Length: 177
Picture 1 (cartoon, helix red, strand yellow):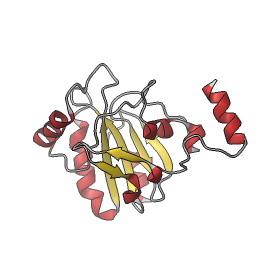
Picture 2 (cartoon, rainbow, N blue to C red):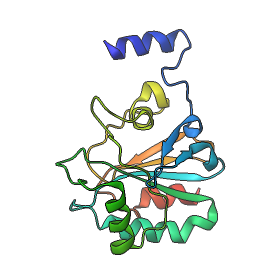
Picture 3 (cartoon, helix red, strand yellow):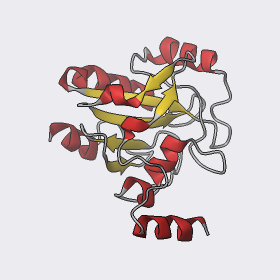
Picture 4 (cartoon, rainbow, N blue to C red):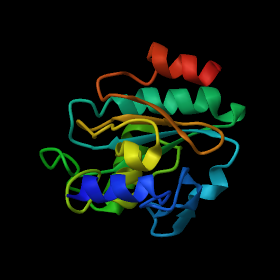
């Protein structure tokens, strides 16, 4: 039913989210402060849902290395801790921040823990995962460390699924465009 309503509204020229890019979203960072996504204008953005107790958690190392290598080229990574998959992110925001810093030296921005799927999905992730909203593709979050590529205009470009490492050919090609 939701899809039918969304399709009807889109045919009439309406958008459910009101956003055709990420710049109208406001999220909360891991310290509890508001983070305006519009501050990312002009940058390529890699949005990643993260977890501290996952077999893919070592991807933090590659993400940090990628961030350090490309951050001077108008690139940023935004981490969104989520506890949606087998409760692999059980900690508080403070515990997550400490874990990321202590174990991986994470310096890219981390946001407050959110839900990336289900009935309580965060509005940003609803936009990222729904073609009717992002205009590109449906990209349901399959697991922790799924990577969404956003261009310099805040538009959804593509997704790298969880097992694709931060230095995958797809991500490096996108960064080199």
